[in-house]
Length: 185
Image (cartoon, rainbow, N blue to C red; front, side):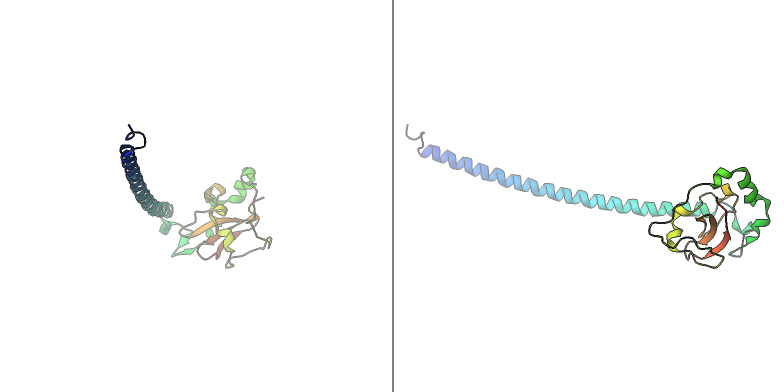
């Protein structure tokens, strides 16, 4: 049987096998293309999800800021009148931080670190001066001013630790609104 030992039938079967192999490879290529398309769509979905998360995150931050601003009705507060800070808070015994510091000295003894790259050292600032933007980061804010017997800060105002001083700053502009020197140890 010369036909089956390298004869015409074997060659015919070989050709069919090769055609099937080529077809299989084409199908594999098609499958890979579909996989690539699927991955692209998945990435697009992920990007859209990320965009949604970012947008949601922005909304949450805004909500949190609103809660912070509305903690107390600032129109009735003695420290904030007609959009201007009233430093008469020092006459209110609730904010007697010196007496409070005497009984809670450990609260006023936490280490302070200058921002990376700050080479200017301490400068004594007063009301109206502008604090460098590196000090306006939230890591320098006093998150709970009343813990130190300081009045609540409203809107864009924040109490910020600057070396051993505490300054009330408008974080948009860096302008100092109020200062207590030698506040921390």
